[in-house]
Amino acid sequence: MTTSSVGAPAEVRERVDRLRADIARVAVDVGRDPEGVHVVAVTKTFPAEVVQLATDLGFPEVAENRVAELVQKHDDQRCAAVTTWHFIGQVQRNKARQVARYSDVIHSVDRPSLVEALSAAAVAEGRVLSCLIQLKQDNDPQRGGALPADLMEVAERIAAAPGLVLGGLMAMPAPDLDPAEAYRAAAAEHRRLLRTYPTATTFSAGMTGDWPAAVAAGATHLRLGAAIVGPRAPRAH
Ligand SMILES: *Cc1c(COP(=O)(O)O)cnc(C)c1O
Image (cartoon, rainbow, N blue to C red; front, side, top):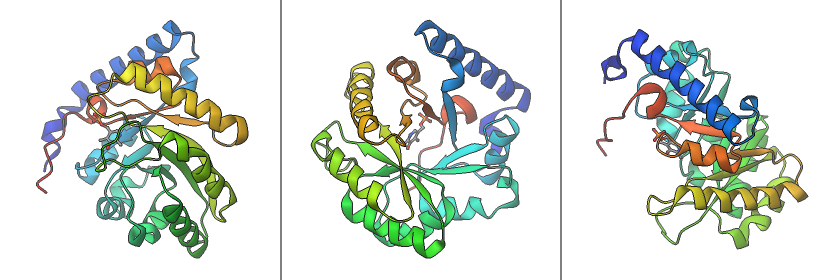
């Protein structure tokens, strides 16, 4: 894939300037300080040049959802300006070691067995990982996440695990849910988490198609792909 789908830099800059202004306006409209809304650039499926483009545009926090892609980009010179690697895909326990080595924040922690694997991997790598619990708001077995009823157990495991810090909550509502409603419900779960775990300050919510609803609900971190780097080609597999 080439970067041509991203468009000319001037065009991208214009889109990103508009995006930043839109986020600030929506934040102010709902009574929030725009400084409290951070953007993580989702560069999955795009090559390393696009990661460089994202960092050049002022997005040093980057997210990937496949381990192989994360590993490849992490060690690429063109991705050297990334300050924080976010992992937003489902994690298989046998990939925990690579995730622990190459990412800083994991948005998709959803079960005690994964907490154990990540903790062991973080200790072995000598790293401290910020773990967000992915909230499950549907009954689709294909989609990851911890149900609200299981949230506190997963939180407790993370908080007690060597090498892990409970960073907060991540929500990614199924496409058939109303995003505003889903994000409000997720925000309530986030507040519940925060009452017991003061380190859990991150509420990761909002994608290109629905981020205003997430900002209104209190999202601290938006995960934006297409809004920054343009539309993705579908995966070949
Ligand atoms: C791909 C992805 C995003 C970003 O999607 P866009 O619609 O391109 O903004 C956000 N979160 C997760 C978990 C993703 O997999």
